[in-house]
Length: 225
Image (cartoon, rainbow, N blue to C red):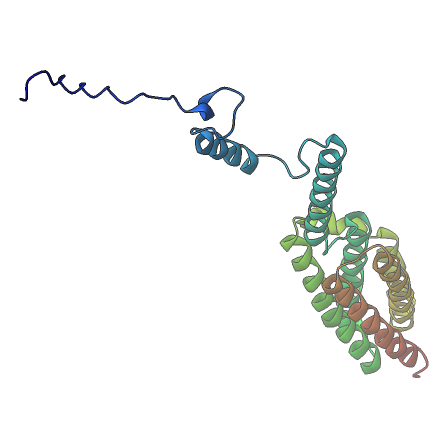
């Protein structure tokens, strides 16, 4: 070192200036991405409509209406085969009585036209009754023999017994069957008006048409000497 030369000053450490953007109210928050994620998660679980109470109420009301419509449709599907049990039971009871009288006529009539009418009536009404009873059973209504026999009219037995004694059985049983078939037709019509299922309506309509044909055959038998 040359004489009388002052030593070089030692370097001073660099100064540190703290970042100004970490102040509570200043600029960018380095943890903002965490807060943003939380807000996004909260938004996913909010009911559409945000904080608008009116919109939320409308959405809830709309959901309730949709639920009511769905329930109504399900009920409609379940009851699409809807039927009026009392009236249909009356129909089956009238069928039972017609079958009973027709069976008696087929056994005891003398004229062939009367026998034919009685046999056709017996077989046709048996078929129609079986179809209706089967339908009712499939839809929760099972009819016992006792219930079916409630339609039996003892006065008819007396009428036919007296007719046999006076040799007027054929004409009497013909007229009785036509009368019962006509009454049966009226019951079918009333039952038809109280049901909505297409299958059941088809059964009743078919039975009604068959009754019409039998009534015509019965009238022809009455007019046959």
